[in-house]
Image (cartoon, rainbow, N blue to C red):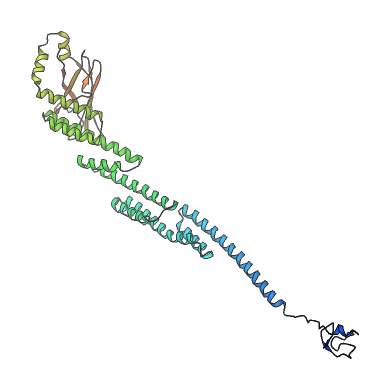
Length: 385
């Protein structure tokens, strides 16, 4: 079969021109035997389709990466908002990040945690209101609930919220402590308040702790002195030791304990014999030390910050030998010179060496008016010559 070498149309042997394209046919018959392939007009369809799919894939990939970048940017913005305490805005930003990238799990988790953060923020605000209303326990209960909400979480935001909770907790406890101290607590209540104050880690609480401890020391000193004056030495020592549990190594109480113990020994081991030996001593120096060994430097009265009358003073040893167990007897008189009350107090330190000064102090909790103090006599002990 013969073909037009130009367009591939079937031709007859005797034809000189192609009936289709009109071109002259080769005279050599052999040149007409190979058909010319017709061009397929649909060859570009699969290639074009593939090209469209490739371009679409690339576009989707680029768009997906663009959306992921925007999601990550929104996520980082949400983290910063959360750090700044703007939890509502942070939640919306995390949700925006999640809309742009569903696979961004941290955004979903943080958006969920923002609800907890908002709840805790609301509890903190409510606790502050309760603090102003002096509803201390209700405020502390709210903070406990807030802390429980964070029990199964960690991270910088959790640490930040916990710090805010603990700070407000300490503030509430401190204010509650101040409130209780203004209610004139008993000595047993003061001991409990001392324990409570020591658990609060604030500078103000430390100052309150020192104040409570001083009040316990003053009460202990006064009560033990009363027992010692009544010659109830064991009770007095027990009172002092109890006070030292709350004020360890307190110089004032340690000195008082020493005084009580010496008084007890003197009382139990022939105190009268020692006094008689001192009285019988013939030496002039000993007599001067026995009868004129102390010089009163000062004695004054003043009200402390709680309205109680405090008597304090200073004496000086003019003896030539050590003196100890020095007691000062004084009267409290009003402006008319009438004696309202008498008292005996021991000085500290217990032993005074020549030219040393000793102090004495006593708080009258049952007296709330201004009185003057007048020394009746000062007594002390000497070692035998």
